[in-house]
Length: 309
Length: 173
Image (spheres, rainbow over the protein chains, first blue to last red):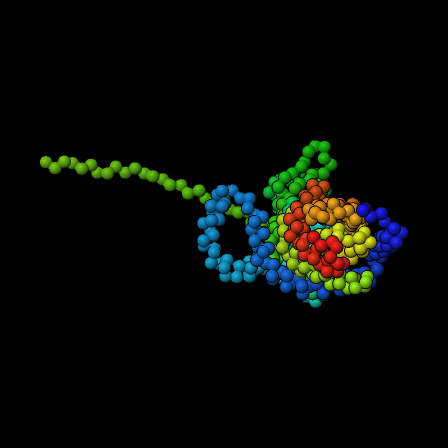
C-alpha cells in the first residue's frame, strides 16, 4: 500500500524545510556561530584527512595512471622503454620522490620570482558533486597562511586561499567556474581578465583590441595591491585558441593552465609578495626543438684488386 | 524507541561522513567520483518511512554542508537532501514492488543522486553560485550517476543490514 501521508509527517517536513531555509539565511547574513561550526568541523577532520591521504595514495596513483591512458603509439613505446629504467626508482618511495620533485620545482619558481612562500601538502580534493573546484592543504593560519593568498605549483598558478583554518586551508583552484584573475600577456603586456571554466582550460577576455593575441602567448598574473589575492608575475598558462572575429567587442582566447590540477601533491602559498615585479622572468622556457640527426654517406671506391700474373 | 533509533543511527552516519571526508575525497576519481554520504543517506531513506527519510535527509545534508569544500551557505545541501530523501522514501514506502527488488532501490538512489545534483545546481544559481558551463555540469552529473550506479550495489547489503539493525528486519534485502 502506498504511503498517503498524515498531518504529523507534513508538519515535520515543513519544520525541516523552514529550518534549512533559516540556516541559509543565517549563513548568508554572516552569523559567526555558523562559521565557528564549520571551522570546528574542519579542525576535527584534518587529522582524519591526513591519515586518509597517506592510506589512499597508492589507489589514487593507480586511478591517476588509468585516466591518462590516451597517448599515441610512439609515446607508449617511449614510455615502455623508460618504464624499465624507472621501475627501480618507482619502487623506492615513489610518492616521496614525486613530492620532492614538485617541491623542488615550486621552490625554484618561488625563488626566481622572489616570493616568500610556505610549502604545504595537498590532503584532500573537494567533491565535484558541488560543482566547485577546491583542494585542502595541510597548513593554515598557524603557518602564516591567511585568506586571499596566492597558491602556486612548480608550473605556475594553482589558485587562491579561500578559507584558512588553524591547521589547514581550502584553496579555490584557478579552474573553478567562479575564479577570476587579472592577467597580462608576456611581451605585449596586454591586460585582461581570465576566468575558470571547470576544466584545465580558462577563458581570457582582453580589455582592448589594439594588438592581436597569438596562439602560444604566455599569460602571467597581473598582480593585486599589496600582492593579495594575487602576486604579480606568476605564470598562469598558454594561449591555445583565439577568437578575434570582427563582430566581437573584445578579443577572447582559450588558455591552457600550466598546472595540471589533478596531479597536485605539493604546493606553496605566497605569504609575502616580492619587493619588485618579476615581470616576464617567470615565463617558462619553450622546449627547444630536438635536432634531427643527419647522416652523410660518402661512397669511397675500394682499390681494385689486380690479378697477379 | 525514537531516541534509541537516533542514537544508533548517529554513529553510523558519522562514520560514513568521516569515510567520505577522509578517504573517498582522497581518491580523486575521474568524472567527479561519488559521494558516499549522499548514496548512503538516499539508500537509507529508500528503506524508511517518509518522516524518517526527511530526517535522514536533514541530518545528511547538514553534514554535507559542514564539509569545508561545500561552496554554498550552510543549509544549501540540507534543503536539497530533505526534499530528495523525502521524495525517495515517499515513492518506495509501502510499495512492495519497489522494496522487493534491490535493483529498484539502486535505480531510485542513482536517480536521487542526479536529482539532488540538479536541485543543488538550481538552488546554487538562485543564490548566485557560479557552476561553469552546462556541458561541464552535465558531465559531472553523468559521471556521478555512473559512479553511484557502480558503488550502490556494492554497499547496499551493508546499508540494508545496518538499517535492519536499527529499525528491525522488515526492510532487510
